[in-house]
Structure formats: C-alpha cells, structure tokens
Image (cartoon, rainbow, N blue to C red; front, side, top):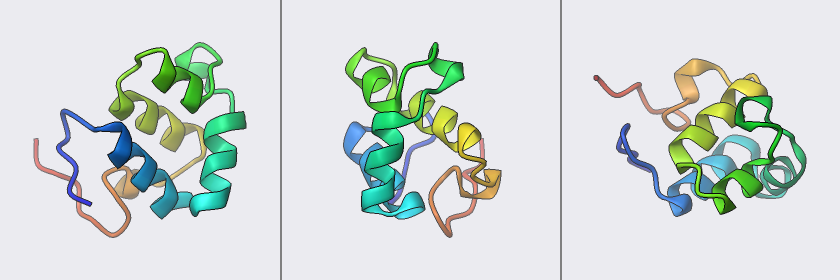
Length: 81
C-alpha cells in the first residue's frame, strides 16, 4: 500500500485499517470507537461526513495507540516531507 502523505482515498483507509487491526476488529473499531479528535464521531461517521480519510486514519491511530512508525502503513518507512 503506497499512500501519498497529503491524500488518502477511502479504499486506502480501509486497507490500512485491515492491515493494522485485522479486517474484523478494524470494522468494529471504525464503527464503534468514538474519536474525541473528530468531535466524538466514529471513523465511519467522520468519513461519511466528509472528513478527509487521512485525518480520520491519523485520529484512529492516535486513539488506538498505534506507534507513529506505522501511521504510514505497516512495515513501511515514514515518507519524507
């Protein structure tokens, strides 16, 4: 999964969630975990409301204590800015 740092498609978001958390648990997280950073919305609700997928992904990573080294995809180095 090669993500552009400035943009993330919802399909890339879904793939990142599945790779990080597993498909089943990832669906539970995106449907049920209220993200304070996104006004208490779930990831699914935030995406549906038009919040950029990248912002939702990063909020989910922070809320779920994903190490920053994996915010750009599992096993992939951080992109240079």
